[in-house]
Length: 321
Ligand code: CP3
Image (cartoon, rainbow, N blue to C red; front, side, top):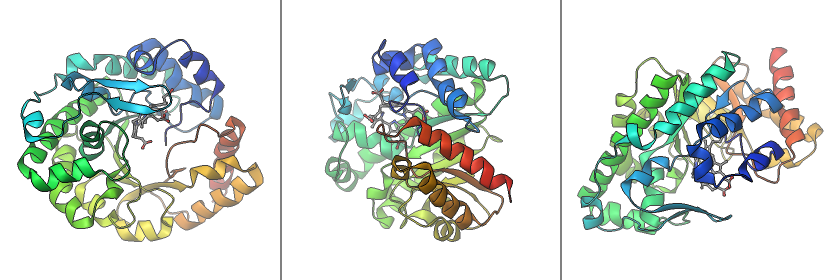
């Protein structure tokens, strides 16, 4: 889940002083925001404050975070010629500030809890780069995939290379685990995933520094879970649209799973949150290899005390097992 963010007054206070990209680029402020949920909520891991789109800025596509509209790409990559013009990203110099944030956070955490780094998966990052922002139907992406498969594969290659460097840089700076967000991959038919995405995900996981756990997450993936597992990752993250026990059967019990409380449940009072958190833990059956999490990020309307209550409830219920 995204655990830092606008539902926290502490975050809004820091955010009031910087634009979103400016905040990501200021390692001291980004480290502060990374630690806020650890201090306020008592979560078991810190999640690096950064963004999946930071690696596309150096591609020269014109990234901007508009007020309340989410990300905007001013020069979307739509045609073969646009793809041909993309150079490799010099990740180390382009996003060195992220690695500096990781190092700062690690120092300040002093091993209190582990730090999870992250990146977007090539398909999800490409969805922004090609559509020009958020999308519902991903028609530009799908047209490029179907009509210009060679250009699509080249775009994926550029992103796989940049993403592997981005994640390995975070690992070198001290990240204890990494999460790959393929948030919008659920838009794909299984055969399309297998043809146009899976080979690139396999290439990405193969490039990651060995020995560091990788979490592979997507939403709307109920029909894709065995394919996601085949593509790679030590942990498969699932959203709330699938029952956790069903999801675990689908990916196999020889891999760990993360999830999957419906994030909107946090709008309800703690007694109800408790009931729903227990249902997720029951679905996991107390087996090793379950990481309790939300099925996706925290809505900005969520009362922070409800999130704190959830953390306490999960700690209490899982200690009893
Ligand atoms: O603690 C954390 O989890 C925060 C770190 C984090 C952010 N983005 C900060 C952020 C993480 C893990 C992400 C990942 C991310 N970014 C994803 C994948 C995760 C997911 O939710 O599926 C995606 C798709 C993005 C791209 C992105 N960045 C979008 C679509 C938006 C706008 C969202 C919105 O609510 O308006 C962002 C901005 C963003 N990234 C915010 C945060 C805290 C909100 C920015 C703000 O303060 O205005």
